[in-house]
Image (cartoon, rainbow, N blue to C red; front, side):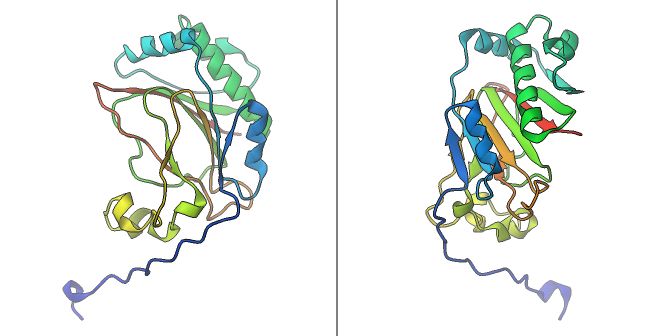
Length: 225
């Protein structure tokens, strides 16, 4: 058979199999983030409202074109660890410091990779998984991270298997699936493929749309060592 005549064999859609309890968990306080250690759970979202002073500083950052803070810090260093980038942003510096400490306490890591960036485009517009242990994402201004619970996704259509079709048309989203979106201020913990015994179950998520007219300010934290 000539190469032009070959047909790509793709898996037939599978019926949706509901789980007894969703893999996506919503919590009301920091203590609730420990739900991440439950085997079934791969997304934990802490719903919260940001303080006005923090929102004001976040909007100040959005006024800086191409703002990006990218560094690694040791938990316990304090807000000053973020240097001149946040000298005039005490509430934002305190926020970064607090969540690096929370992540270190949850994972036992000794170094946290910190990224705070002004985004005008979706960094990862397609649903995907991360080959990390866990990633913390919080949007201070703009739309929050979008994700699918395990019962709503057919993983056979992740990545190249979608053959360029949209997430909604590829078969990745099961019949009746609901795309969930975090609100500004929410803190989302995404369990990755490298989490112990979590291979094949990394959280499926994507970035929402953004533009120059409607930029986002997003914090991303990763355990480094």
